[in-house]
Image 1 (cartoon, helix red, strand yellow):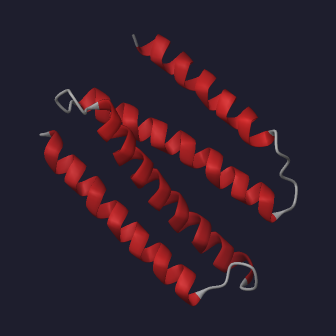
Image 2 (cartoon, rainbow, N blue to C red):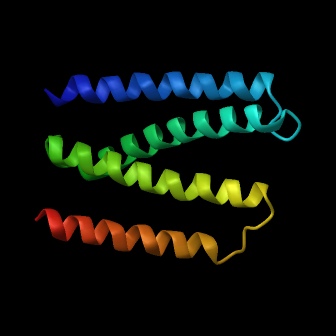
Image 3 (cartoon, helix red, strand yellow):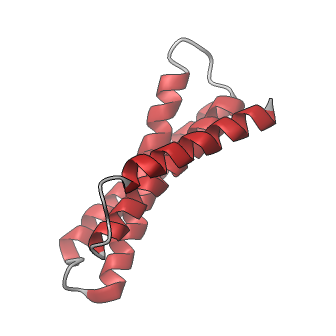
Amino acid sequence: MIKPIVIGITIATLCSLAALALVLWYFDPATSGGLGLSLVLATLTFSLTGLLSLGFLWLHTRKRVVEMSWLLLSIRQGALVSLIVIGSFILGYFNILYWWYFPAGLIAVLLLEIYLRLRVE
C-alpha cells in the first residue's frame, strides 16, 4: 500500500526537478521580474520538498518496514525544512537576510516538530 505512494512521490519529484531545470533554462530570476522569480521559487519548493521527504523517509526506514506514519512524518519534515530554505532565499533576494535568521528558523521548526510529535503520541 505504501510502495505506490512512494513511487508517486518519486515521480512527482523528478517532474518538479525537470520543471525547475526548464524554468531556470528559460527564465533569469534576477531580470525576469515577479513571474520568473515566482516560477523559480515554486518549482524549487516542490523539488526541495520532494527530495527532502524522500531523504527523510530513507533515513527513518533504513532498518524498518515503511509505514504510513513514517511517510507522513517524512513529508512533514521535508516541507518544514524546505520552508526554511525557501524563506531564506526570499529574505536574501530582498537583502534582509541576516546570519542568525537561519538558525532561528531551524530552532522554530525543531520546536514545532517536538510539539507535534508530543501531541500526536
